[in-house]
Length: 563
Image 1 (cartoon, rainbow, N blue to C red):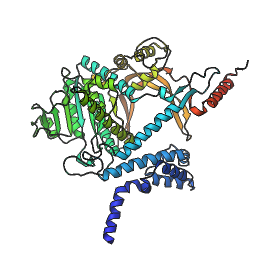
Image 2: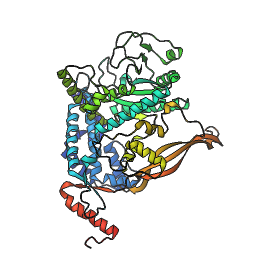
Image 3: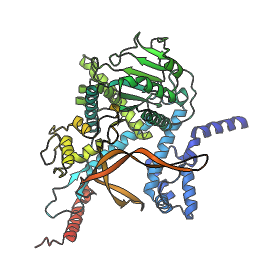
Image 4: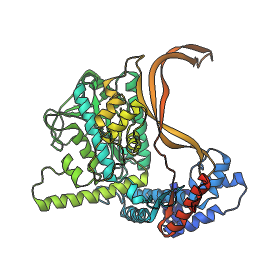
């Protein structure tokens, strides 16, 4: 009995071991978390001892740039509430993964418990956005109509993905004009990263989906770095999709020079070395064909030694599906992978062709219902593990600048910025763009104005190009740390120049200086896009908030309103 008891205790500790001191709170409710956060914030210890105590409970160092800002956090119940909630939700889901409750033959992507938590969170968020009012910090008396609800100004998932689709289409058009090839690269992690594999014997290393995603991201950054050093540029869209057992895999829509394909695949297999499948162009969703080839190793790829598939659905860690644009549009091909796990609305689903082969209306409705249910589960998965759905690469960071320029009602004075402003708005007419007007920007022209695609190659040395940066001003956050607040955008000119560069010999310690090519940037213009400072006010206290804003306006301007 003693041995059985010890074995049960060891099994229990193994299931909850990574939660540390918070393991006993894995079933805590929201009220329990608030009570625990308040207790931790009021816990009295000498300063440095409390930081060490907090580190043990969080399982990680307390965030903060200085000791004083770290202490401000551990004495703040709001910090503890957010930190404990995030940690407990992830550890609880990790427990379900260890129990094999998530997977192909169980609950898909995420547990039902976490799905319910996410649905309740979204419901509270929607209610809060409806009841929270935005008003200017300094409000002129008589301008009470200048208030908005957060619901009116917040971007929705549908609008975000519609914007991403517009840029993806623009990138595909530019790629076709430049004669670039397109392909869909799928990267999968090794078996030990899968908590509950649908095939084969489990060999899970115990890592969370967040750890698995970080491993993928680290390898991908190494791939881009190696290719850049070799003079090979890539552009495209990265999409993260979970397996049913919550282990992530990546679908990457690639744009590249046709003669660079071998170098790209060799570099990818350096970091994902287990088998490569190269698929001949076909319509998305079609089964493997006789033209599909398998390379069992990187050495086989270098030697160009391939073989046909051993069986119909043979998989590989790396899979490249070449895209023939006469068969399938590249942008739609890429977005289908993203929209498989995102409900972006009827219009975008139809435009991309998410349900192209369904003629029966009842069957189509059933498919849409199934798609929405899967999208909700994947949304809960991404929210829990902090994983972004999709991201563009090999193109100027222009999505934020696009939004900043579209919000600006008046045209900038600087000609280059005025050109970008007109491209983002789709018109050179001034005034606010109201929702539902259908006024669309020129994403293709916007990308071209900011340097085009990295896949087309680097500009010649000595040739300047323009890009967009952030205009910031210093400020303080709630914990007394210096931060940079975004106030607008800057127009930056980048030129590759030979500049003095120092290098240290790691064997002798000798420092040598020589000229090397470096990217030199110069800010040539700045544009404030956030001209009004806004504050949040609950709807029930709005009259008082308006009076305070008007009083601040009178105090700042010295205007006698009564006169």
